[in-house]
Image (cartoon, rainbow, N blue to C red; front, side, top):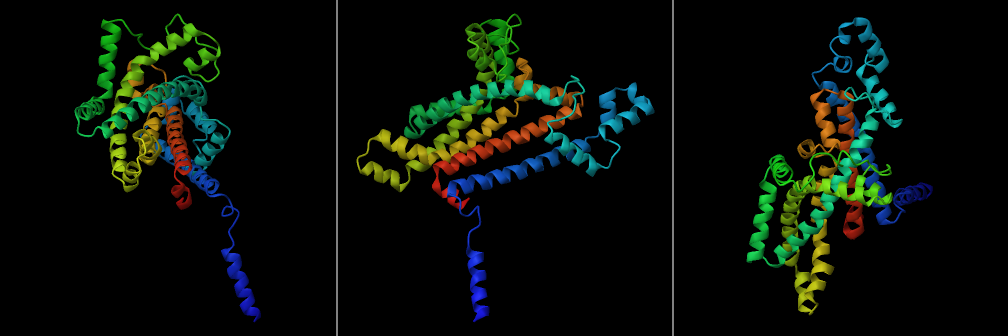
Length: 363
């Protein structure tokens, strides 16, 4: 009897849910996804550090230059100061310690802390990415919905052709063509940069000129910053809209054929209620996936577009860092890009769980 009682107690203790199990399903789902994201960030640091160390380039020569790197005393002093004389495993943990304290090293090209350079470059890319993704969601999902509701009609065919053109045109070619036509020939759009040379940047709050100029009440600066967004924003929006149109059309068509949609129509519900209350909500999960991937790609920097328009964002900074073998900057960009994708996917997962109860129960 005592052995049976202890056995039942063990079974009861095993079946009793832990602290996480007692949380509401959505909170548990978010907590698990957050833990996975932290592990992924740790993995990104490991991959970034490993790949950078596998690059066939001498970081000492890249940092010191050819003349200084020829002096053994200077080289030895630099290696000791940067911890390059230690084993690779020790270097990695030193790298992690620096990351915890916000130290990404110093850029060889600008001689500034990499965190400072990224603090300037990332808001520029974020401003462009937000401009593009907002326009793309409004236009892309709107046209995709129209195409799905008017399947195989003339408007559907036209929208599908336009979306295919938007996806097919190389972004770098479109950027060069629009820059040449609208700036060099027609003179109807500003050229490179985020502001005209004669315009002073607004007081820094977010680093995004359109937002900061509005916060400061500088409407002239806001107009100038918005005008500079038009060309690069249009180039990136055309591709993103084409992507969203095709995926949203496909997702909505899949939902419109479901039995509960047919039942809702049979009950006499208005078409608008069926579309917005049932169809779009059910189709939102695959659409959100594409929106998240597109936004993550935009936030991680569109190298060629930023280079053509001299935007000064993450993409242009990454290009210059790679061409000059600026390894600290390359590591910093790689880390930021990885974190951007992880954070974007975490946000999409949270939205998933909020929209669809099945996801948070299974997750």
